[in-house]
Image 1 (cartoon, helix red, strand yellow):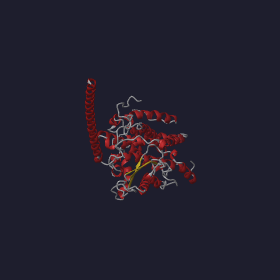
Image 2 (cartoon, each protein chain N blue to C red; image 1 turned 45 degrees about the horizontal axis):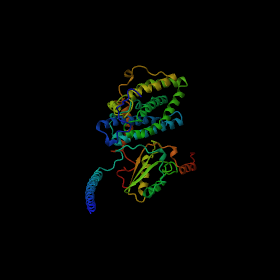
Image 3 (tube, rainbow over the protein chains, first blue to last red; image 1 turned 90 degrees about the vertical axis):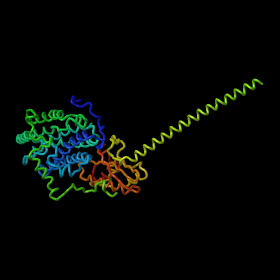
Image 4 (cartoon, chains in turn cyan, red; image 1 turned 60 degrees about the horizontal axis):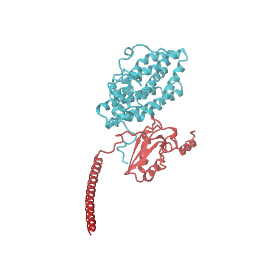
Length: 289
Length: 181
């Protein structure tokens, strides 16, 4: 057990349902969920750009599948935010771009034609994701516990996919050079995955997540740095404070890449004059039978 | 003669003692009756409190996951209206393969209370593009069952679905379709 782990925190699953939380707890739960949901949603938005541009047809299908999983996971986390009275319209389609709390890593555009960018990003992201989700397995918020196992079960092949491609690209000098460039560009943004929201202390104290983000960051570094070094890549060194980009994502600040992406995926919604997310099926509460 | 008299007096005393005993017993019975009455009052006021509470919310308490060993729910032991719901659910097929949602192992529980059916189900994976569609199909099927007025679907993700959840009949359907299981 990590010495940082809050031992006085409530027991796993003991917080009760969305209607049982006091305001302070609810705010903390929402902050954690918002990061999980937005990371998955935005990373999937970017992955889908590769769906018809991968180096092989199988790579197209692979990345398309991973994007589909991440969208599925985003939906699970947004569901839990909807328990608190939000809906898809205000969470996504009519949200302010500044409401999103994803890390800047997932919003960056890919360097044109650079599959290595997609591979390195996925590798850094999927290892982060595993650690954060593992720290939620014993969450004090039962609705998270109920679904995190399912999400974790769908993640291992994402990591295998990324590692498989990392090794393949690292086999020759040209591939290694492109991996290195991607790593130099993306690594500082990957650090924003571990940046805290203003609810970090409450999230840990209330046992919503069992490990603080700075502990997870060190665990992550201990996994990815040796692997990348083993492939002949140099991981940027220095204090995180110096490496981190100005925009941190988790505090609502984003890179210049975010607003164009946000407007791109909400364009059709506005173009069609929508005022709410359209459901293909009737709302269960409004159905006649 | 004096012996007889003493015997009579002793008998009279015994009677008196017996009478006193009777009275004590009666007091005890009355006290017990009072207790029963106040307990009945408590039950009644508790029942009134329950009836006046807001409508049932599925999220107010956390239930430990359903035991994997008991899954999936196939309706084998179901009776009455619940059996009728299962019969309808066997008619709902997965959108991709000719197998019912019951045989695919997606149904975890069916309960009907006062004409309201609740179907607890899962999906094979989180990214299922037919989530809304399947849930609605299941809800409508449950609502069609004789004795059901309204129906809802509760989607759960724990325990996680796996191939183990597919019934023997479901495996046969999948093999016939060309999927090896």
